[in-house]
Image (cartoon, rainbow, N blue to C red; front, side, top):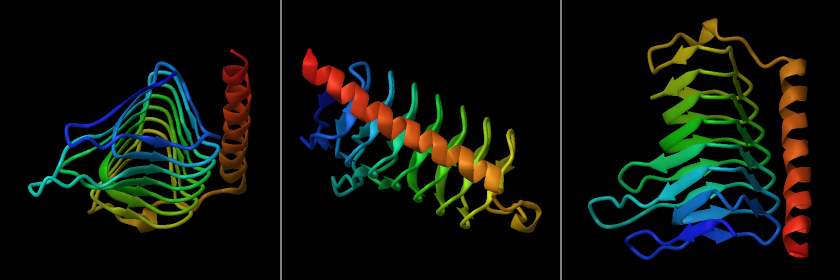
Length: 188
């Protein structure tokens, strides 16, 4: 069983019965995991920092999404983090709120998403940084790119069919893994 624990306020993670959370993952505080989510080994999702009024917004992982090995999702001062449906957060990425990642987004290995909105259908390839900005729908961020509030988005390409197909295949595979690992866990 995954390590699920309350934050200092007493908020406890809520995980759908159809989700799979690896036993090595840690979910702490006001975390909501929707249906058919896969959370891989050593992921850490912490909604434990309160704002000055003691309030903690949730970290929400949308249905059919996957949070892969070693991903860290956290937020400063109780701010919300939302991961949309059918979104893939690849190995060792960091999502740090306040942050909103839309539906059908792919965030590549070792990428950092901080204080921003990444809208539907974007692909952020490996080792990239996106911070302090809004990344509009269907943008493609090549590997090792840094995007800030002053980046001219006209220099950023739109998502290609190949990138979309890759993102969809990763999402489908991880929904399948969530079902398979749940079945195995139920047999133990």
